[in-house]
Length: 324
Image (cartoon, rainbow, N blue to C red):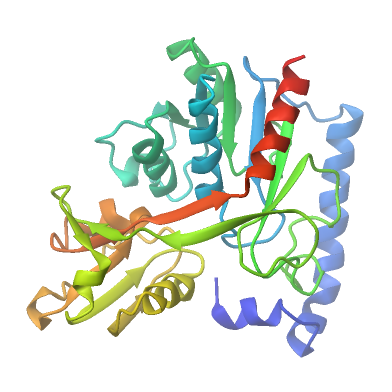
């Protein structure tokens, strides 16, 4: 996503106003689609288990995957069998398959692989998420809840609960794509709203994002971030908002000689190693499995996301209500 377009979405300036007529067409088509599902003209499929969808209404990353990981871990701590389904955006395969610890991000997608590594929960990907849900339930009958990573607008999958995630952008300029960042009008009905940024734009539960105190190498070894302060460093991120990762590293006192911002879900096929330049490369956990074959010495810095306790209390109440 072009940086200048993201900036245009924050205000109703010349670029946004130029694109506004197209957004009216986008909104009309989206409304027709929602009506078709609501009236039964198009069919929503119900999964074999209750479904909690974690998604957003704004284009670009707002923290869905860290939120999914936090939710899955919370359910696991409560003793609830939980699995995760996803389309597996960015993968080159088209089938339905299970995400295993040794899966390639090329085959299953970088975010599903990260979720599997972070939680150990069963994870399935498929172009049609209902196929992933059916396959997961059949392979792992102990699972009692399915968490859908992304898919708030995937109305073909019926859902029992919806969690909408926002970052500090909020709803931007409040206009629909392509004049603004909204995939659908806001406000809309939603069971829970969670803000992943430090400055929420409106009411909702909050969470705190931070970097782990240590980076992890390909061999599983760890290096405290404090020990990296004296090294020559470069940072790379193939995520929706790379600058956010770079800023968090800088806030921890790390001086970056070079930063490389790549498109979200980039496969690193064009990556040129920086080892010869004497730089230690820092990357996100999401990018680690893709960069390590080309930059074995890169260190992955985990992102930690902790929703406030009140969020989990509200989530538990919603889960109990849905189960009842």
